[in-house]
Length: 116
Image (cartoon, rainbow, N blue to C red; front, top):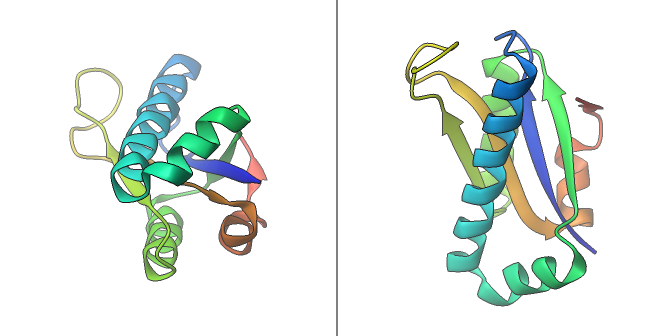
């Protein structure tokens, strides 16, 4: 089964609406990247109901490590940086999306993270 993992930083103390917006940006951008890199997989994920999991990390260092590990394993992944219009400084890394991809590929990277 395919899923998308969205990982959010908690140290930024974003409000609920801001977190929802950053997670949405991550999901959409991850899907677009996936559709370009592997259209068949993206379509399959869409047909399966777009399974997602939203997880949390304590800071940028941990977020960056997960992103780099996903890239190393050839998993489509995107970084979301804030535009700086509201609560967060411009350019701040707020979230990442991994996949959509096979759960068995994502779980070794994100399986120990806690749900948001």
